[in-house]
Length: 336
Image: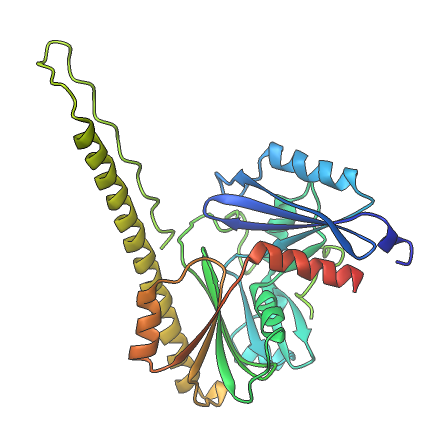
């Protein structure tokens, strides 16, 4: 470690978003940021990585003295509970034999199914992963950077494909829930099932398991050319310009409508989480009047209005870049 800090270390974060794999890299030498860059690759299928992306990651690992790859886990079979014992998992109806789990501060736990862990291991088999970060741990790292509040607070980690909803009292988790904001029938390979899933060898430095898809907007089709026999008219440039503005306005309106539809779903998840927290004796509910949103995607003004006016909750917003957060977490793990 003494020698390592004087050599080039590259930290690579991988986050899937908007049909792409976003790869963000930071090069650190002697505690100084020497370079940072981002490259995107199309994610055509959820259960495969392109050879171009594999080649790119392998080239980065060969180029630098030390390299670390961190993945943001965004699969369904994960969660967080208050407690660390098998009895605590049983109370939350989680089969501890089917999940990889890790305690945080010896108070609460994050978990992910063996199916999901094995799936990402196979997905990046030719590249290798050093860290897998649960969204609950990403969220926890962000709230630790804020001034602690002397009351329970609900936190939302907003990613394009998911929302992570947690309630903390200071740094102790009281409630955790993870929801997808997109539908994907291929979240896992489909070749395995919960009952038959078995634990495989863990990834070196598997971290912090420490401790519906909204339809894409269809592109506007171009007008077919008029037949040569048809009567032609001189084009009015002003009319053409107006048509372009009209199309742009329509696209913007459709995009806003799509965002609003997604945020209605987020609001539904938020209200159902609060209902579960207040009504389930498992949580020993306490009053929540503050929502902190770590926004890694986009939040509509309508969602903010609904939370403030319908739930009478105060909102605090932190705009974040999840790829940068994950990259910094990996850096902290190694060079702190």
